[in-house]
Image (cartoon, rainbow, N blue to C red; front, side, top):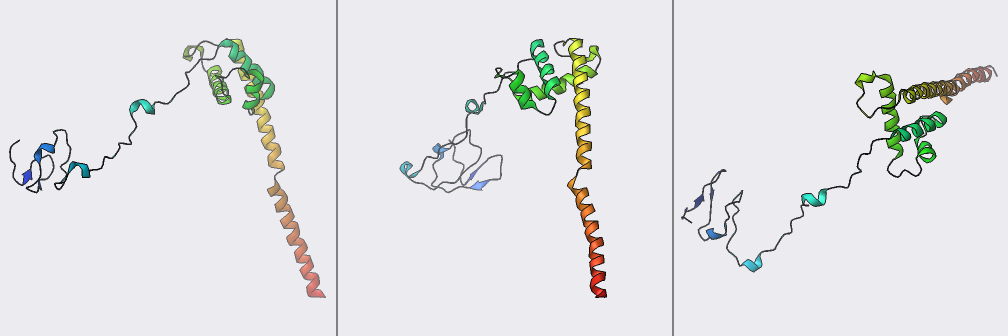
Length: 185
């Protein structure tokens, strides 16, 4: 290697080097020049590389399995009975032995079925689902949406906040009356 004197050329700014540095330790694939005073090789510690290899980062993912028509039939039947808010119960009722289906899979499939039933047949991309099943999906979806709306209305009328407002206004009225009695007596 040629003697470069006190400077080494690189893509970065030049840096002065001590004259007693050994140049045969520098490799050509280095990205930066590090100044290391002369010392014995035994004095250097080996630092392990903690970066994981690409192979160890591979996570085992589930293989996507499309729903069969029989599974769609079972899903529609279970949702028809149980509704769209009880996916764990749907899983237990219709897919208890299907370990490859989670309740989230069932919820997502139902959402997709509702969307598929609402669009034109020419726009559908997945494996064809019989129109009779899609009609049942729309019927069940409409029924359970209506039930959910009724439940929300019922909850709005029985809110504790409205009771508290009524209670507070009653208390203010009675407090005024009590205060008036105290001032009179």
